[in-house]
Image (cartoon, rainbow, N blue to C red; front, side, top):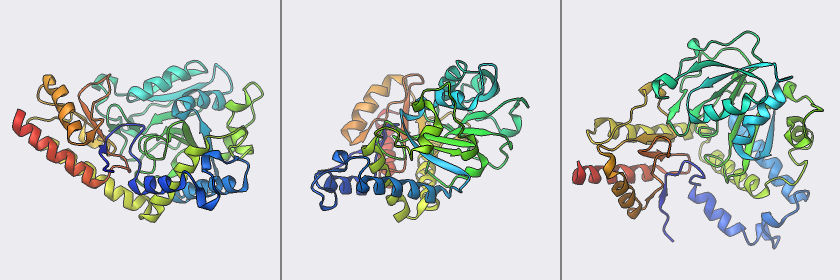
Length: 360
């Protein structure tokens, strides 16, 4: 069976090697006569799968003992609520948010239900085309935490340089850039990421949180408290076992293939190829500030909007899937996560050249 190249923003492409392993293991995991999806989450087999996946994730990001790693259902969007619910003492407490794209706006909307939100920096006046530099952020001294989306999936905007981050309690949504390159976790009090882009299937979020933030809050339901997950090894209830298992397989694949340093080299190579072609073209355009360009999500516009439908139909006919931009911004978007091989980007560029020749 041939595989097409999947440029979906999420759920996203998984590595072919991982899918091949999954195909072999689904009916019979390691001679047990059943699949992982049929195992008790309390069985010694699944506990070993879960513990190994967690440790591999810790190894990849070099997470130290000041942090705990939690596997939580609900994806990253649930974290928009859980973060202020857990980190703010009451509805009068102040927190800071960066308004840098569509997912930032959703996080801000949820945070306002649980506390007082100040916007420390915004690129709304630039149509979210440039990420505000850290030295321009205005954070109130009473702010409990500062929330930022490191990579805005829809807008294709990313904070690429983390050298000058403020030494404050920073909380970062890393959903669309996690594991794409090395990341200094110690710059943050908390990181979180939905799994369906660079980790595994949808429905799961991975939380990296400083242990001193794990306080019990009697006012919150058990399932909405980070401490519940920390105290139960993320098994207070039945966790999303398939997503956890498959995520662990992706972690093994990353470690086997040179870890995050190698992955950064691969991802930068893919992104540089695609941006270079777009920039030299008179037919395609990427209007994101060059210092703020994502290496995971590459939006681009065609010379004429009337050609969008034709581009999508012909690209799909050539085995290049899910290139439509988000409905809120239009155009095209190629999400080139870890699971998209470099030859997929090469095939996309070849198609774009041919399409430009025929329609430019």
